[in-house]
Amino acid sequence: MNDPGTEPRIAHLAANDFPELAKRALDDSTLRGALHHVTDLFGDKRENAVAAMPEWEAMRERARRVKEETLSRLDHYLEEFVRNAEAAGVHVHFARDAAEACSAVEKLAQRFGAQTIAKSKSMTTEEIGLNHVLEDAGLEPVETDLGEWIIQLAGETPSHIIAPAIHKTRGQIADLFADELEVERTDDVQELCSIARRFLRKSFADADLGISGVNFAIAETGSFLVLENEGNARLSTSMPRRHLGVMGIEKLIPRFEDLEVFLRLLPRSGTGQHLTSYQSIFTGPKASPDDEGPDEVHVLILDNGRSALLGDWVTRQSLGCIRCGACLNVCPVYKQVGGHAYGSVYPGPIGAVITPQLAGVEKAKTLPFASSLCGACRDVCPVKIDIPRLLLHLRGKIVTGDGPPHVGRETRKGRFLERMTFRAWAWWMSGARRYRVAGWFARKLQPLGARPGLVQRVARKLSPPLGAWTAGRELRPAAPRSFRELWREQEGSR
Ligand code: SF4
Image (cartoon, rainbow, N blue to C red):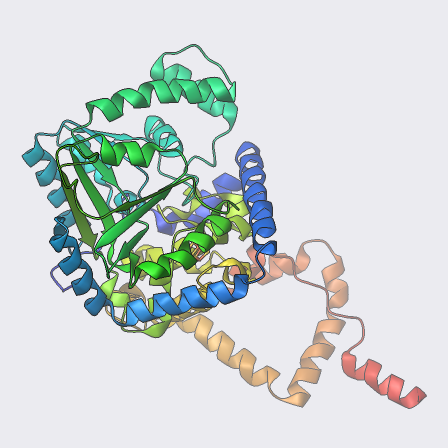
């Protein structure tokens, strides 16, 4: 779908500022406390939920296969979905990029004469920066998910895929409510929720249009599904007379029966719940005036760089993501710096993969390096996305400047010095005699390392790769005796 005339875009992108933003986050002990508390809680709950399900691995494998099947025949399933959705009375719209999507939603809202728009949580609308476009057009989009509403009040972007206000403490939320809503300050959680409920109820009643995300779209029936825990999505999609679902092309699954596996995997992976509290399936508008639900249902299907990833089986994997957030909760980098450091609405390991692929590597070239490659994200991913492999793949593109036109355009020249250094290193270390000599030198230079900071200071003066590595790492001391020496000695004593 994407063609050269379109420009994939992620709103509020500052991904190349990762090193600076991460440093700032590391200095914020309140933020780190909040992050650890929630990610550990989600992680523990997930572990318990998974332990109670012996067929977990089989379910993951089934989910991976369904996603792979869908993505390898996406054009076929898209056509099937559109045909069945339209037969059920849904108006289907397509958008090639963020600008087209925002403009289509704005025109729809104007056609409906909508002023207040009740929105339920949607990462896709965060991706395209829909709220700002609607506000600039004089409309009033109101986020009705509690976390999203909090960050909308604060004028921020989400810092976690499923818990957008994870970075905020109870005290900070109490201050925010007191300042923005002019209510008496309280940090009692029940009280804070009651305040939110009071304000949000009015928005549901006033809304002329409800906009939701889409968790899964079913080709076989033309239905789409929204999962949530607060009941706000159900209200946003049933009280206004028109409902619009916004989805990326990757949200499709072929059959209704495939839902079974995802409905079990997603909540367990994200929050450790066995099921999400509300599961709403939409198949067209209400059939008769006496029924409940909207008079009109629309769905907007967004590309925004996704179709460019379909041709390669490595990059295609990232479109299998079901946005559960489990990889964020286990990531040692995310747990330290939080979501805003990534400078993208998609943070964490999956954000480090999706952001450069959708927006272009040159706009997010530090993100694939924001990982220790420990593999924890791959181990928890319910659809078995090999995130470390994708990160390495993107690092390769960045370093060599190789790849599809929207990947690494600016870095075609590559890092010549780094490549030469690695080549020389590989040559030196692949010869037994040279390897022995290197070990001997390292041990002889060892006493220098005993003087604090000396080796680091020297290394920083060296060529850029060495200098960059040692700026943030301690050089490990070489073992006093080599493995060969120990081996020889042991063999001799025998
Ligand atoms: S990559 Fe996997 S673990 Fe991470 S959000 Fe997507 S589905 Fe969940």
